[in-house]
Image (cartoon, rainbow, N blue to C red; front, side, top):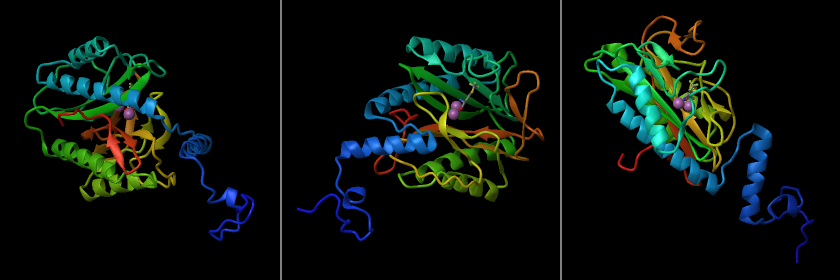
Length: 293
Ligand code: MF3
Ligand code: CO
Ligand code: CO
């Protein structure tokens, strides 16, 4: 019988026990989780956590869908906020944005119209024909978080608005299609920014996607722009991708009065779509989709 202390058969020069000594799958999973938490602060999720996060994500997707149906010319973003808030409570969930951060975010969803990049605060202004808007829903169900957003276009929209709406959707879906264990985080931004630049758009780099599940925003950050983050994706990671794509310059300016609303520096339109995604053994699973999609 070979001893665990003998050199490994693979020729690495390491002891067998430090190299290819077979370990129980359960222990392997635990070691990975410890490694990712220690190295990157990333929480690899257990099957039980994944089940809870999946439920929160499905709910977020359903609330988002329902709220989008109410987005029409003549409606106010306040009305959308009230509807979404009620849908959370009816499902036994809480809206994560409400009172989040400093200063506390004052509403239950984000509504970002036209040149607003993200973190638009619902108010009494009327939506009108020709507007585009992003609705962003994050819910907390049984302590688990799910986060998604999408665009709504109201009637006929101009060239720039149509362009950013389509390009941001393509950026999201193209980057998702690449996801599997072993892919590096920088590859996501690479796909997104190349596609955006090829279509004459810019990528916002002041806001990023994020790990999510047990908290609203967890490590890692997921930049949508060119970057060098050599963190390999691993089974059990859950994070968002939420590219913000501008027709003009990439820079965002934060509203000095409410400290939240981010607008394009040149007033040209911006668009964003967001999913929460799980990395699986073979690839990925979009958690914020509805069964019927
Ligand atoms: N849902 C947003 C995201 O995608 C965050 C909104 S923060 C808030 O990360 F405070 F504005 F809600
Ligand atoms: Co998010
Ligand atoms: Co969001």
